[in-house]
Image 1 (cartoon, rainbow, N blue to C red):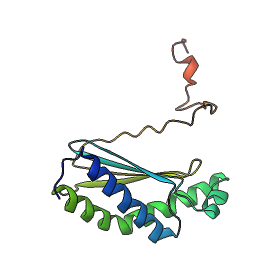
Image 2: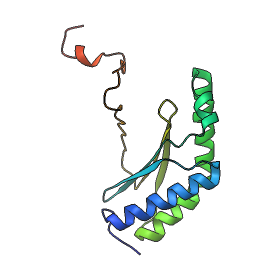
Image 3: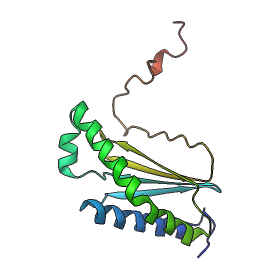
Length: 145
């Protein structure tokens, strides 16, 4: 296909492939898949991708760590297939791949890059309570420490 990375058709195909692969690997189909692509990066976010059992397990800190560890291992052994699909669709090899699992929301983010640094910021749902991040409360960033 070799479509530009910003092509809506490419994004749709990648989303369908990622959704099918996740369903095949885990037996659970994500609610949705979002694809964001630039010239050198493809980021796939699988929304509500955790199974009901994983959500229950993730309700504790140790359980969330186990769910994250499981999905990192699953990604490590299965990302080659997704890499091949990305290469088939874009005509470009994937140099790096990473996964981020957010047990609290059930989101799984796959990032495929060509040597760039990828920073992923997942926003909380509208109306959700803001939590302290990196030890700084968002409303107190400008106040002296």
